[in-house]
Image (cartoon, rainbow, N blue to C red; front, side, top):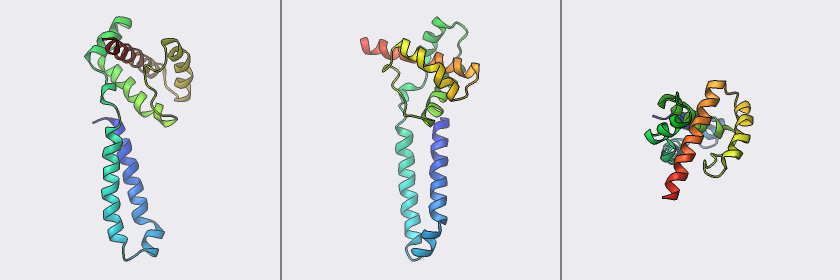
Length: 147
């Protein structure tokens, strides 16, 4: 499973635990505490499923993306693209929403990515993997749009 799923699930579990054990819930609403917990659990499970399903599956790197990446960077590998994807999904969203890859031109990405890489504290390998992922996936998205 995707690491983004486990992050979202962790947040939901922590929220449920907090609400279940909160002072207000236990002391002000003792008679409905159990009903609240059951409803809360169902609601949080539903929210988890919705949030995880909101991550676009078309963004996951595929064979076409690897081929495109290797045409620009011959040493690019599938695990490197996957790491670039994971960083893009997990770390970029720590500060802002996911940006549509086709929204920015190649020049705009080239100007933005170094600054964002520094903000995210990426090492050089992680940064390269994100760059390769973004440019390969963007190129394939634009190519599909033209068809």
